Image 1 (cartoon, rainbow, N blue to C red):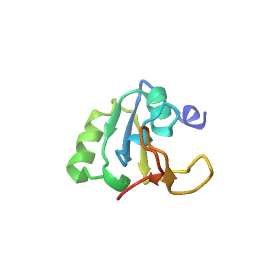
Image 2 (cartoon, rainbow, N blue to C red):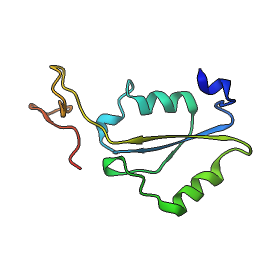
Image 3 (cartoon, rainbow, N blue to C red):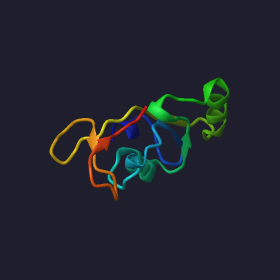
Image 4 (cartoon, rainbow, N blue to C red):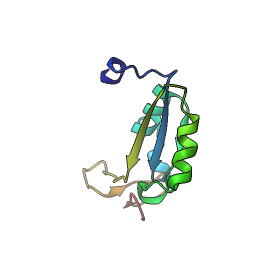
Length: 105
């Protein structure tokens, strides 16, 4: 991986996420879960719409948790669902009988 070339390892890297807490973002095949499985511990910084809500104090707290001479990775952003028919913005939630929007923010 390109990050390995620059010295990023699971032992010296802490990942933060700033993503919408929507349950559809946490299926085993979703990027945040795959990245957490690879990098380990996660410092959550976000909320609805993926905006980091932690502010200066939260970023300071996050940086104080990073291993000495270590690295950070931040995964952030909003999300959009794509239905099985390819409709952008729609998703089928578990237990529901009709499509809904992926994010209400």
